[in-house]
Length: 495
Image 1: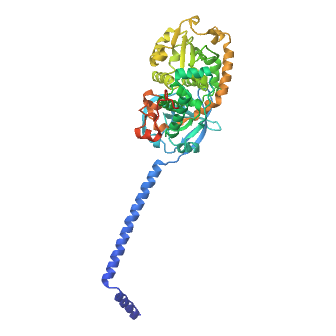
Image 2: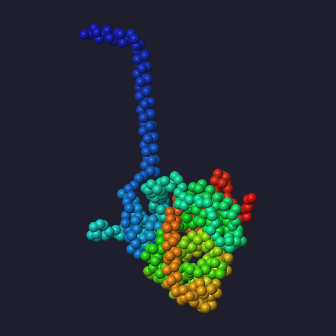
Image 3: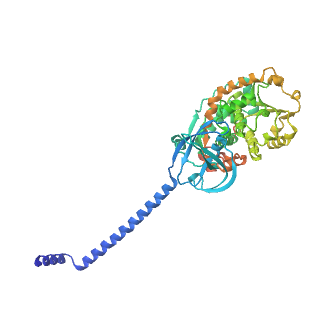
C-alpha cells in the first residue's frame, strides 16, 4: 500500500514544483480576501439603500372613520392614519374646524411625521371623544392640531393627480353671452375686447397647464374670466389672484369649502335672512346683496359658519357673467350687532379676511351702504375701514336712519321700504342657490401642492403670495422662458 502512495507523491511533485504550489496557495488566499471585502461592501450598500428607502417610503395603515361635528352634529367621514409607534395623536387644522373642536393654546415642539413635518411648533391641541360600537363607554384623547400631518395620502386619485393635472372643467370655445350693453361696459371699464379676451384666456390656460403647483383646476372660460375682469385683464395680477384663491380655499378648510346651502346650519342662516340677494337689479343692472348680521347668534354659530354662508352667496353670484362685469351692491343693516359678534374673529383673522376679501375674491364691489351702526362697535368699523383700499373706502356710505339711505327702496324687502316681503325674496334666492349648487361643490376639488407654500402663505398673508415672492408668477427668468412669458393684455390688439 505504501508503494502507490509514494508513486502518487512523486507524480504530483514532478508536475508541480514547490514554488508553484506556494504561489497557488497565496493567490487563492488573496482571492478569498478580495471576495470577502467585496461582499462586505455590497452588504453595506444594500443596508444603506434599504435604510433610505424605509426612511422616505414608509407605508402606514389608514381607516375611514365616521365622525360627528360638535357644533351641528353633522356626520363627516375622515381618514385616520394609524401609527403604532407614534407618541402622540394629531389632527389637521382643517379637520378640527370641520368638527368644530375647541382649541386649547399650548405651544409645543414636535418632530417626525415624514416629509410633512421635521421640526415644527404646534400651537394648539383639542380633545377628541371616541365612542366604540357597540356603545358601552367612551374615551378622551388629546390631539395636537397641525396644518398638515402627511403629504402623501394613500389614495389612488391623489397619487394620480401628482402625475397628471386634472381639469375639472374643459377649456371651452368661448361664446360671449353678454348683452350688447354689458359688452360695451366691459370694453369701457375693463378694457375687454374679443382679441384681449381670447389671448388672455390662452395665456392663462398655458400657464395653468405648465405650472407645477396646481393639481386640479377649472379651465372653463367662465371661471377664468371672473379673475380677468376683476383685475382688468392684467394677466400677472390674475395669476397671483387665482393661485391665492385656490390656496386659501384649500388651506382654510371648512370656512370656504362644502359650500352647500342645503346643510342644516346654512339653511338656518339663510332662512333667518342673515345674507341673501334681492331678485331685482338697480338702474345700472347690478344685484344687491342684503346683510342682517344682527340675526347671527354668536353663541350658537361659529365664525366658520359665517364665512361659509357668505362664500355660498358670493360664489353663486360669480357664476353669472353679468355680475362679473357690472359688479354688485351691498346693503347692511347693523341692528342687533353687539360686542360678542366682534369676538368671533381674532384681530389677525379679521385683517386677513378683509384683505383677501378685496384682493382675492373676484368680485367688483361698486357700492356699499350701511345703516343702524351701533356706536359701541364704531371702533371695529373704523378698524375695518383702515384695512381696505382707498378706492373701496370711497364707495362706503354709512347712515343712522333707514329713510336716509340713498338706494332705490324698491330693491329692498318690504320690511325696509320695498314691495316684496323678505321671506319671498329668500325663497327666490334659494332657487338661485339650487341652480348653482353642483358647480359650487365641484370647486372643492380644486387644489394646489400645499407643501410648496410657506406657512404664512397658507394662512392667508397677502405679502407671501405677491408677484416675485412665493408665487408662480414670480418664477425665475429661466423658468419664465421655459413656461412661456406672460404679460398685460389690457391694450394688446392683434389684427
